[in-house]
Image (cartoon, rainbow, N blue to C red; front, side, top):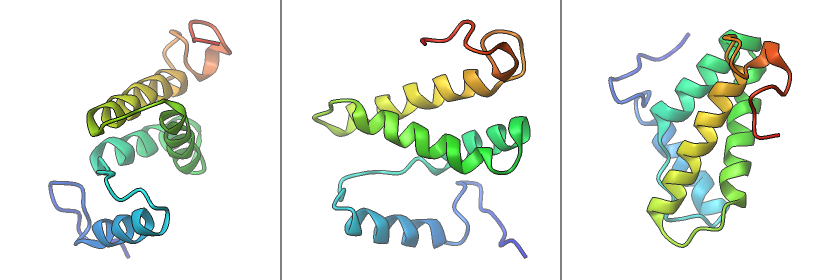
Length: 108
């Protein structure tokens, strides 16, 4: 059974606890996680390609953002947003570079 989700997208603090534990373990202490952005991407991707699409898309966004050379929090935030925007375009079924279009209209 799912816990109620408050308006900020954080189910009763569990995501905060998970993020804190993981950022400490991974030594990325200054990272702020944008839950609504990532959860929205995961939901959109899951609707487009199935339930396994959500985790894969968010992993790839994190990886792409991590490859971006950054020196401050704003750069990290911008890199994540850019990667989410590209992932959303690539998984849309709209005919403008989405999943039904192969590589058309993408950066590849």
